[in-house]
Length: 465
Image (cartoon, rainbow, N blue to C red):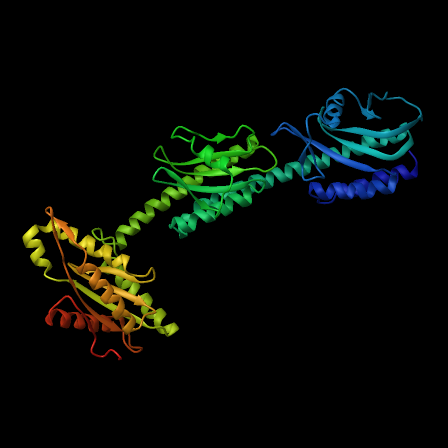
């Protein structure tokens, strides 16, 4: 070797001591190699044992087609040292300085005693190189082999760390959130970040139909086709090309949803499938816990009969709304409702029929309110409603509409239809009063409505005209 050869190996050794990902390594090798010899193209290839494919490291690990000549070279290099001008050669240990005309050169990357990749060099014109150059390239390939192995191991270690972090983060969601419309997008985003090479979709099952929850759209009909084939015994399903995988979310042996991974390039590898199976199981546990917690919390805050807020939850919401209203200086109205002659309904038709009336009136109340309004069962046949961002005159319009809807809705009891009516009192929050004071005034207005004939809406006497 001459000084130029030693300088070449020294500079490359220096590169190999730096921290690189595989793409940066590829770029730096090409840059340094161009200082040593003129070439047209340099490519690094590594065999991926997980997908059983040969990949181009410098081109985003793209898969090489089976019929590509690189595959044939990869097989030949298991028995030979070099491929020169598309012919395989085994170089003797003892060889003199022989000149060789070269158009292309392929050198194996060795791991242990096995080939795990190769370096391919293509030259602009036919280059005359000597056998010392080939010996240098063998040393060069040995160093590159070790560097690539280290990069692959580090990247795999990082993937494993990221995988366990994803598992922990999905499990931890339930510590702070239990609403599915919040946690499912979070799970989708976590899966999407980890399985970054594939598009992730999250479906939840509703009335035997899979509804897309995350992201907002899915236009691939093959996904819906594979979803239709899922059953309670399915571990996972793949399309024929292995580019779409469906991984069911299950609870107590029943499918409650599905996570779908779709690739636009590579097939799902065994490693991808393993990760997705485990992440799906953790997601299912988290979603099932969220459902359980939601039900527990629902029963703790909702009235079991009417499914409206119970009185305890109403008082919590009242405090919150009073604070928000005073801080933002927005209007807030309170509405107290009583079902007229409800005792007569119970006495005539029985308490079970009375429950039917309560449920139907509660349903009418929910249907005629905004999503931001807060209806509650206050006790017995009384209902309390908060109307944020509402002045008294607007509340009166809502009240009259609600009163008429109850009056005009027939309720079937013992195979006969009856009609019930409601009385209502309204009050608007004064900037200096408490929530308790507000509802005292609304309750007083309700008393007036009942005393003056029922089936009417009365405003608090202090209401501004």
